[in-house]
Length: 471
Image (cartoon, rainbow, N blue to C red):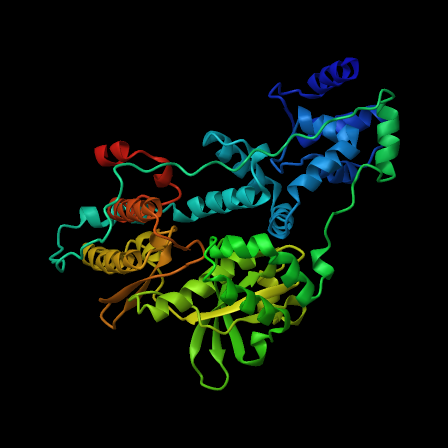
């Protein structure tokens, strides 16, 4: 207790802003007190090591964990208990300090505790902040369909939804809080000894995993253990044989570069990188999505549900081809390698082939101010029908939003079809809660497009129906 009280006093002395968190300059003073010539570059490296939650600052718990050494390392190891978590952490570390700091502040404003979020949740928060910036567009507000009175759209007779949604939605449970590691602080702590030890690099713990050096078969086994397979199948034993079979295939799967010429980078999503590619034999252009093998759970969900929806003849869906490839990043063309440069240490990527949709998504049209009432209503009519057919077969999408509706247009910019894509969160179950979630997201999508408000920047998922309707 006496040592912790001493550390609290020292922390308050360093905390010039009085906000309970140390910025780098404040943290650096800790070493300068023990050694006035302590290298700034070395201190910056230690700062990033101490900043366990990657918020861009060091709070008191992190300060004590850093000084305790082994206890801080133990806490870090608990967070790195899975392949996807390790990969998400590496990707987050590669991002600029300002980006991580903005994500941490946004999470706090949304009532989240950054220190208790998983690495993947933190990475998703960064993507959410960056996506909100991309959505910000004056033209989408000025040219929103609600302000266009010229529409003559006539809807087709509405399709009967087979299941009545419940009267209210229930929030999904929060991720379990990470257990707090015990801290043991040496009674012989001193600033001079800390500076001397830090100069020798003693404060930095080695990484737990070395996913970058794994072979293709090793990283597939590592990323798709028994609980991962169960997560993909949702406990549905009828799906398990297909997932186990594709897992074995991935261990020796060939490279897509033997069949396809990758030509152009198209987009970056939360799950992967999308490129335009051409089949060397047929000349057919396709969209090719590269996904880290450590995120195989999401990819194999998309693979399985693409097969299932094709078998069920669900209309207006962008489905992945059944054959899946694996690419070693070291063999990637320079254009692909450049895009994957900050993707973390993983060397192997799943490559999934889908139809090329060069017209973009509903979100793309909205951002450009090119979404007329006719286009919006025809598109949403197609989406509603697709969701209804999925629900009839107990399939729930779980991630409906404007960017997950791809457009097929004719030469006069008329809508041929609006197609649902991205089945990485899809579930197979007779679950009224998930059907209701799809229905709610569909309504929010209508609101977002009609009003010209960004899906992410507007925080629509977090707002009450009453507030949205009142606007």
